[in-house]
Length: 210
Image 1 (cartoon, rainbow, N blue to C red):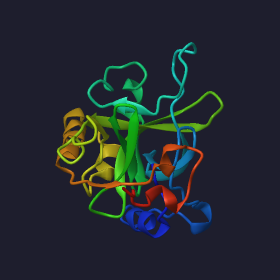
Image 2: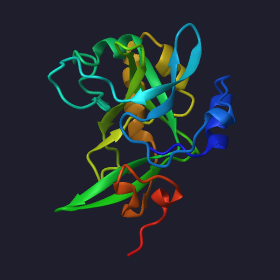
Image 3: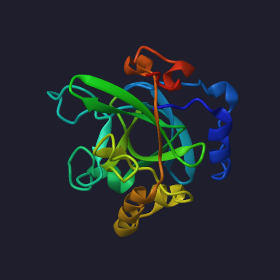
Image 4: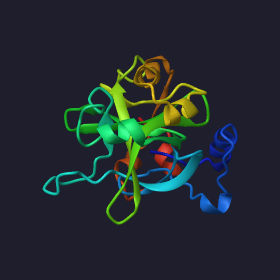
């Protein structure tokens, strides 16, 4: 994920009555699993907190973080069903990365929306150490994304963030997930510099050279 534009993120938060001070914002061009990311959730009111990307698995024998949850199964899957009912989240990002795989080659694309910020639907939990963690909800790729991958994050329609975080109606929430199919996304081939999670900075979104 990419969250580098404080001004754009703050404009997005302004519409929700929230603020993220610049001194609390660290531009990140290549967020990786376990990294902190500012995330929206609802308690009595909408709130913003820094959460780690990746839920801890319920089964201690399972290795790795749960960074994504499939929207098609999240209502029933034990790892996610409680969060789908009570702990939904939104990750405001400037864009995300996806890779076109051709044989052993992985060509990265930087994916953005029509606005400066994409609202990625997610889920969150609090681990046994009291740390907040989140994951991204995914769905089948829409027409924009299907040229490079068969899955994509659920990009919430504009103006639906509050409903996603506060609604108790499953049909309404499923309709918001379905709305991701109508989102127009821009795909920019970028440098393979981003292929390493150790790399960060503007070079991650530098256009690929042939």
